Image 1 (cartoon, rainbow, N blue to C red):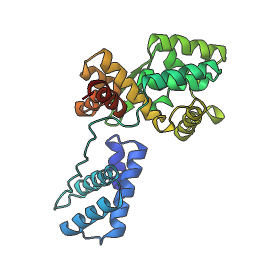
Image 2: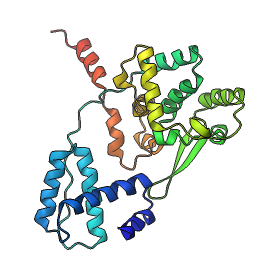
Image 3: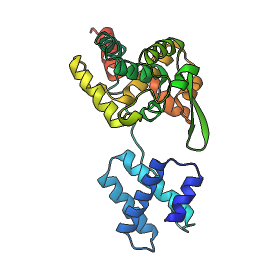
Image 4: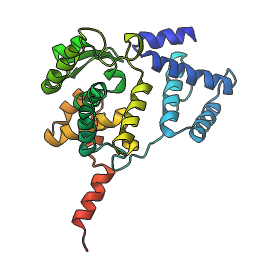
Amino acid sequence: MDKYKKHLAEKGFSKNTIDSYLFAVRQLQERLEEDWSNQELLEHKDWLTATFAAKTANLRITAINSYLDFINYDGIRLKSLRIQQKPFLDNVISQQEYELMRDSLLRDGELFWHFVVRFLTCTGARISELRQFDVSSVEIGHLDLISKGQKLRRIYVPSKLQHDAIKWLHDEQRLNGFVFIGNASQPMSSRGIAMGLKRFAIRYGINPDVIYPHSFRHRFAKNFIERNSDIALLADLMGHENLETTRIYLRRTALEQREAVDSIIDW
């Protein structure tokens, strides 16, 4: 297993991905005999399908296929499950809810959380990427990250947000280090950020189901595509390798669909 772990690291996989792959392979080894047959692999896939959500099952299947390739297994590779995409985006924060949360946090002097919300919505950063912003990246106007596969991803800080954030950081005498810090000057945990956002959603009377870090990334994409139809550019900004992933944001939210139906149909 150590050789496989090294193999994954050499391919540029993140620590979380490596841990996930190793877990999936160990789970397979615990359930099956060492010399697997094609039929046993298919039965394991059936077990994964019956036990886990489709997305989780597919992650395990991908990991297993990776391991089968690594050991040169002379047999089948498991097919991923087809996931039925909803024809709408569900539980996505609306522009009105975003503005209410942004402005309420500013009014109440909750500047840390005000900028958490603005950075998520104005940069399209994932929560893991938000945690990596430091003062210098705000000052130069972008954050460069190396993604899996050793690809460069640049996250831009819009000029208005950059100006406001620099003023806030300088007023706090924060001249270096991470922007969104928790304990010991280290980035606040993803869980800590998610829980904090939920807490403020409840305070301001916003449905907490639509307040989670990735929801603001959805809002970024929705707002962008409504003002600029260049989906290839949006894909680059969001770090998507597949345009089909980005096309999801062309869909309306469930609330937008309801409003469209109510405004059009009067018969």
